[in-house]
Amino acid sequence: MTDAADPAGPPSGLPFVKGHGTENDFVLVPDREGLLDLTPDQVRALCDRRAGIGADGVIRVAPGTLAPFFMDYRNADGSLAEMCGNGARVFTRFLVDAGWTGPGPVTFETRAGLRTAEVGPDGDVTVGMGPAVLGAASAAVVGGVRYPGVAVDVGNPHLVCRLDGGLAELAALDLTRAPGVDAELFPAGVNVEFVVPLAPDRVRMRVHERGSGETRSCGTGTVAVATVALGWAGRSVGSVHVLVPGGAVRVDRTGQDSSLTGPAVLVATGHWTGT
Image 1 (tube, rainbow, N blue to C red):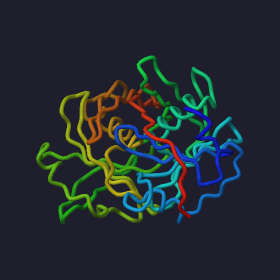
Image 2 (image 1 turned 60 degrees about the horizontal axis):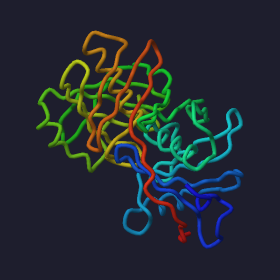
Image 3 (image 1 turned 45 degrees about the horizontal axis):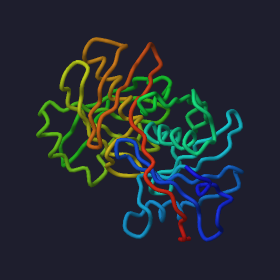
């Protein structure tokens, strides 16, 4: 990584880096001085897959107040988000590759609190995700079918729904529209995961993210799913491998805390000349 990604670079456009974690992709905007004010319109334009760069969300890499860095995550529709697990891995990869931090653990701020992450010897990134708290029973409605589930708080809201019809039922779900959910239980919206258990420590899922639609992966969603899947297996701690359309990650749960391990790849740098 060179200083082409530095906000003090050429004035011909907004410097950016494109990256993904299990194909959940992001535009990272370095803002080392913390002076950039990204508008919702700019975020939507950056995420536009036809007229912009294309991404599931935008991450402004900024200075923090309680830690050296702040992960300012925005959904593709321009709305603010508390936390993004895949984004946190890509954020960490950028910090290390750009030389903003050295090897070893790095702590940064999110709207869900402080998180610590580290690039492993195999290149995968592990992020401490904090507690995942089980909530009320609820349901999601897709195509007129009601899928029972349970709410999970991972610093942002999730609804995990188990499918008993196997992989064929999972593949057939139409997630081009947001699932119907209980607006009183989820007044700010919710990320909805649909899950098929494959083994006590292995599941496959699809996800509809609030503000972004269906994505290839959702890091906080995999933590929510793993927490519920451990309960299905009669456990409260352990490891769960979560398969998503964009790849696979591992969630480790120890007591109330959990961690997320998976790939994080930076694929391009450039300057955005839009408005």
